[in-house]
Amino acid sequence: MSFEKNILITGGAGFIGTHLVKLLVNKYPNYHIINLDKLTYAGNLENLKSIENQANYTFIKGDILNQDLLQELFNTYQFDGVIHLAAESHVDRSITNPLSFLETNIIGTMCLLNAARAAWTNLDNKLFYHISTDEVYGSLGETGYFTEETPYDPRSPYSASKASSDHLVRAYYHTYNLPVIISNCSNNYGPYQFPEKLIPLMINNIKNNKPLPVYGDGNYTRDWLWVEDHAAAIDLIFQKGRVGETYNIGGNNERKNIELVHTLCNIMDELLQRPVGTSQELITFVKDRPGHDKRYAIDASKLKNELGWSPTVQPEEGLRRTAEWYLANADWLERVTSGTYEHYYEKQYGN
Ligand code: NAD
Ligand code: TYD
Image 1 (cartoon, protein in one colour):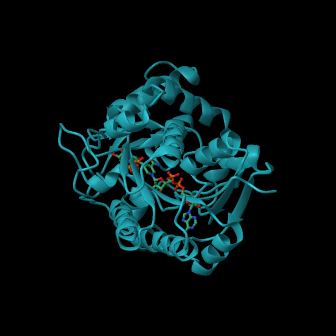
Image 2: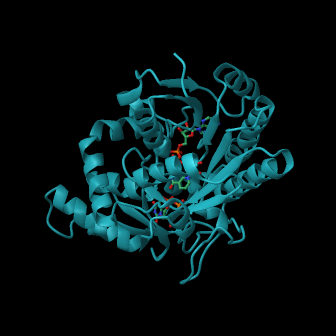
């Protein structure tokens, strides 16, 4: 079967990758979507059951650090585009084990760039699209927003590794003319997120009547984006973004952690039919995360003005849908949290 385009997605079995792969496979029957994923603890093929047998989808288990494999895949599938999501993505893990972050996020990105560079002798209609985070910009005070011009100032091993990969992607653009685009997105939430990140962790703990570990005083702010809105933005940027450009993606939806946890507690009390206030009693303030960034907030006006993208799902609706999904998918939650799963932070630092 011949396809109009062959697209490599890396990290397609992870949280955001799951939503993106499903979107692209269903929306573009003429595109062959090839999903390369190592299946770390964060990757789960179960997420992709609904599309796994579609003719325009292929899964390959493999590591982006495997240069030979990457070269072979580029030769076999003649990729027109790459959307690179594969990464180690959890800040707490990066504090205790930075090496795997540097390996996958920096060296892995370089291997992928090298493979594209070697294979793409003709650069017409080729695109290497790198998915990154707003955390590369560092930490904001009470006011202001990250724009595409904000200088990089990463402060955790995770964000430093992502910043480094962004710099490499730009270096390959300037040095080798590799056609690249980068987008930097705020915190995502929604179904299929591994329950070590704030929102699914709190939902899971409320469900199991376990303490809700809020770092420091809880007055840290994140800008939350519904994951399907991010997938839609990636699709739009991949189709219409300008080569060499960076686009910020954000939810325009800032919440202090403690406010967000209160909202979740109220939603969960209602869904679990518990008396109002039951879940809030589980809130436990624990020792702060080292180097904890105070506030992230994105100015996404470039993406809105150039390509017409805006977030569609409002926070209270999104949180409710997320909580409902985790309750309805208790088996999934059980499977991903079995085995060696523990709260990463508490394991390292205790209370
Ligand atoms: P995730 O941790 O849920 O998924 C990462 C995926 O990458 C997993 O499927 C994993 O198996 C795979 N992977 C890891 N190392 C690999 C390797 N060496 N080779 C091949 N595959 C490998 O992450 P996510 O939350 O879906 O994030 C995806 C991307 O988006 C990352 O690059 C992340 O930095 C970026 N991002 C995430 C957020 C967020 O809020 N989650 C926000 C902005 C940007
Ligand atoms: P997280 O989901 O790890 O995303 P990131 O650190 O990449 O923004 O954390 C979101 C916020 O929630 C961050 O300020 C740290 C805080 N947090 C807690 O207070 N308790 C927790 O158990 C976790 C995982 C995070």
